[in-house]
Each structure stands twice: as structure tokens, then as C-alpha cells.
Length: 157
Image (cartoon, rainbow, N blue to C red; front, side):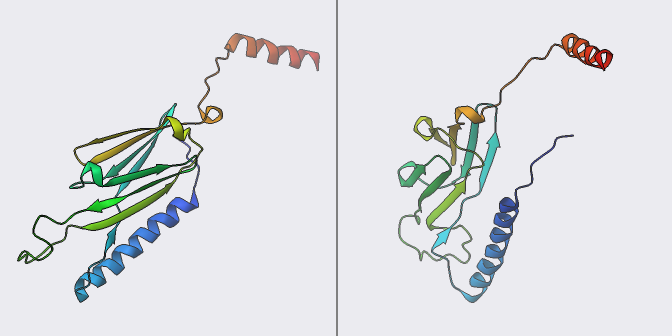
């Protein structure tokens, strides 16, 4: 079983996104269209890096701006309407177009000057090296020495 640290801000962010979706649905019913949208993300922890993936289908590479600091990542840009403008006789259009922005707070500091970005098949992947003090350090413990030290302290008592 893996123990995970509870982070209430993640739960609050999930709740905020769900409430935003509810209000977006009301806007769609009333005929209003939002001018902004928020791309979905994944944040993965590896021993050396944090890997952030953002789902940006249909967004051109040149239309994405990325700003990385020690403790957050900002992804902004625009998914442009197909050539010919907004009104091309669609009966239904559920694809989000227009400007987008997503600011992701990172759970630990990263070395932002060494970050790497890759954009392939509509998925932006950012590799963010962890700060040296937060990288997992593996320490080898010899079980025999531990058992001998414990038995010595018990006999000394």
C-alpha cells in the first residue's frame, strides 16, 4: 500500500473545475460561448523530475507560451477557429476555441532553467528537474549491522 500525502489544494482545484463545467453548461444552454478554456493536465513524480503533460489538441506549436518558475508553470495560448471564421454553418460545435491559460502550482521546487519541452500529437510534455534537495536519495542499510547494534544496546541495558 502506498501512502500519499493529502493535499487539500488539489481537492479544491478539482472542485473548482467541476463547478466551472456546470456554469459552462449553463452558458451553452443560454447561447453564450466562453472566450477562454482550460486544458487538461497530468503531473507525474519520478525520482529525478516532475513530468507535466498538457492536452492541447488542435493547437499549433507557435500558439503556445510556456513560463516556468521554481514553484509554478503557466501555459497559455490560443486554439484558432478553422479558416473562414466562426460561422460556417455548424449545427453544433463543442470544441473549445479561443484563448486558454492554465497555471499549475508545483508540489516542490524545480530547476526551471534546465526544463525541457516537447510537443507531439497535441500533447505538451514538460520535463522539470527537481531541485537537488528534493530528489529522492537512496541509502543502503546493511541489515546485519542494524541487528548487531540493536542487540548491543539491549545487552548494555
